[in-house]
Image (cartoon, rainbow, N blue to C red; front, top):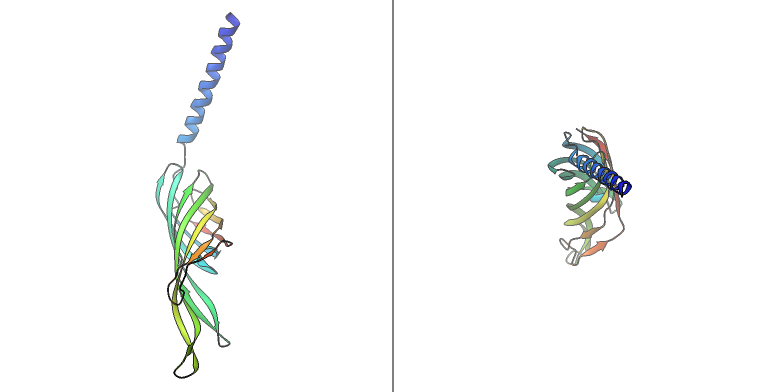
Length: 186
C-alpha cells in the first residue's frame, strides 16, 4: 500500500509538471515585430508574377492577419506584337503558427486588363479590344517568416475562379495552380 501511494504521488507530480510546462510553452508565442514584407511572387495570386507589399495588421497569440497588394504587367500577344496589361493582386491571409514556420490560408482578388482581337462586322476588320477581367484566388500554403524580420519565403496551392466580367459570361474554376514568393520582412 505504501508503494502504491508513492507511485500515485510520483505520477501526479510528473503529470502536473508536464501540464504546467505545456501551458507555459503555449503562452510564449513571439510577437511579430517585422510587420512589413516586400517580395516577388511567381504564380499564385499574381497569375504570372507580381512585386508585392504585405503588412501584418492583427496578431493574437499564434494567429495573425496580413494584407497584401502587388503590381504586375501581364504580356498578351496581339497581331504579332506583345502588349503589357496591368494586374493588381490583392489578398488577405490568416497565418497560424509560432516561431518561423506557419500555415497560411488566404483569399484574394486580382483585377486585370486583357487585350484580345474583336471582329467589327461593320468594317469587316479585326480590332484590338481591351477588356476588364478578375480572378478570385484561394491560398493554402506554408510561410517561413521570422518574427524579427529577415528572409521571407512562402509556397502555396492557389486555385482560382475567373469572374464573369468583361467578355466572359460564366465562372471558370482552375483547380491546379501554385505560387512561390520570396523577399524580405522588416
